[in-house]
Image (tube, rainbow, N blue to C red; front, side, top):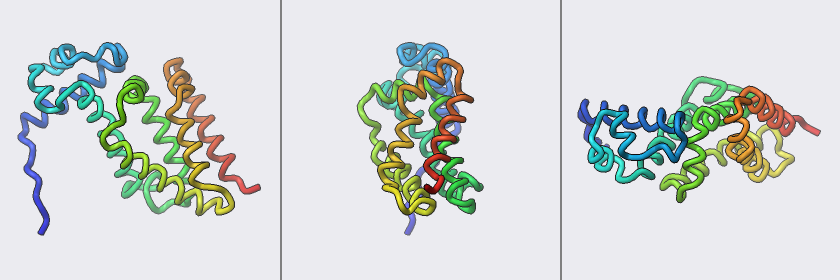
Length: 191
């Protein structure tokens, strides 16, 4: 028997979305230091207690934003349209994944910086295991001659690292996306 989860009340769903959107806007405008519960509450048009009740803490609020993006990308990879989702050649899927991951990091650079400064997300292991398995499976298909696990981890580390954040803040997102794609292509080329 499948357990049914209670549906969220419409006003609670609206408040949740308003809080998350306000937090994202404050991050983009002021960076992580500018995200206080008072500012989020004012921007979202809710009481500070509503935020604490829903998310528990500032970290819980930021974790929810991180999880929202990660879960959406996981869904696209698992069942979305090709080339990010199933049905495309492994090479195309890897390029699409790294482009999507790069966009995720550069679109939310302040969130990623805040996330990296906090203790690990409660679902961090789940997210990282998913990415590692996805990348490793596709790399092994294209390049069975390499250590797919290590090469995949190295590729992924370039996307979330300090250089990517610095380039995003400097407005060099297109340059970064091109470089990441070229790096992935260079790994996919057989010797």
